[in-house]
Length: 135
Image (cartoon, rainbow, N blue to C red):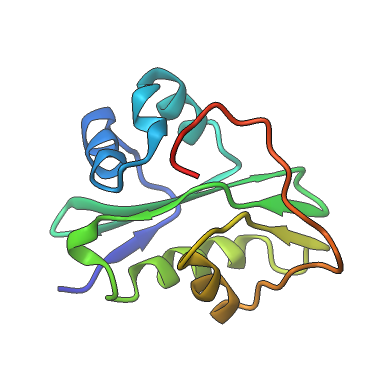
């Protein structure tokens, strides 16, 4: 089963919340804000297998210099099949040539993003004001 990645897909609330809950992301506890945030993103990439939402990623950008990729999720049943890589490549392609591509990653995700070319910039450190419990 090959996932189809699109940048022009519509997301449904239930399928999106199922994906976030399957990955145990705290954003699922704020469904109204989550759906609004994803739909209001500069870019949203989805991955579907036989019509089922199995992954998504989004980007927030100023449209000229900087892009930040806050969310990338793949349903656990579909991990290690290259879906996350396809989603990120689609999003990065939208912002080709931008001065800064930013991501915040932890644990095992760091190695994944390094394979896509992300590196720590100088002595920078991610700093948050964050009410969640999953990071």
